Image (cartoon, rainbow, N blue to C red; front, side):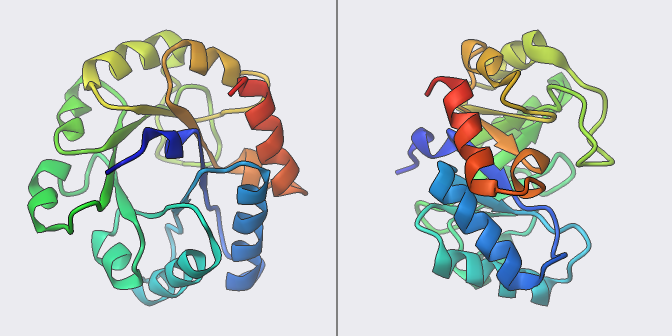
Length: 204
């Protein structure tokens, strides 16, 4: 049974600049600081590398690990789920072939993408604020639009895009089940303290 509490702070990986071990160490530090889920996102990595990293994360972390875009990689690595983008196979089409309890997240950034919520356990909505972490993220939609899309999606919603301790509380007030963060955690000198600061600022 999917627990929306695991969405409180979703830490999304950035790159392998310090190797697989370094990325796993940073993810573990984020979890010690309060991250409740980790999403493996390595846009330039091949499938073999993704499976290796996913397995390492699953072995090291006590929280759910989901893989960006690649359900096949998630299944091969024993990960807990997958997060599907707007251009990926829709959750409703993929769900029948997945194991019971496998977590499925879906990206929503506009009304046309609301159909992605069908069959998903949660939605990631954004970018709420401007972000440099994703070159294809699109224009910032703002807090009010996040709240509107979250209501229409009818699923637990995670806010993504430019999340910092300075703006995270506004998203809780807008109905977010949690926030998804890349740079604010994985680019921080101390990912554990960065995660802790986000939890403190969110008031959760």
